[in-house]
Length: 112
Length: 109
Image (cartoon, rainbow over the protein chains, first blue to last red):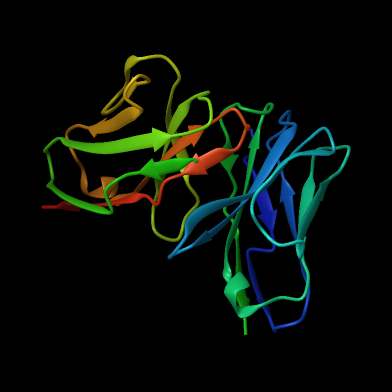
């Protein structure tokens, strides 16, 4: 069974631009969660989607948004990029909410 | 509030046993997870505990005490490839998985 896939794997943007990251969950998984990982803050929860609905949201500004499609694929968008948004963005999928999450390889975003 | 505490760094010798501790405070409790993350890679799932006691899975075991808000990951017969960051994460009633900062384990020959 294929694992969680994320595209793109690497991305370089400049301040003020926006970016869209994509995540395809493991087949049969309907829940997708997003995390931001930085050396100083560790893994920080961004949001969780299940059946196209956002179930939970972390403490991030409104510039961070996401959505989930009917095939469970998910996207997250960051608008008006700041230098501090440079991080590894990880997507994790699970069969349903509160079940074991399996992570994708991540998208490494560098904001210049 | 919600908080996960684990040591920042640990060092152990190849072939030895190491125990990585984690204490947690969450709003409600629905399980404790351990993940392994090698440098530059994504976290991989190691174990899940929701009831008190020890769960053994090969060289790795995980223990949970709900009354003490405490868990540990035990790694036996350490190998060089076990050098990685070990992440403790608790699932509270909010449904959010809250991660600790991770413990970087260095295995030396």
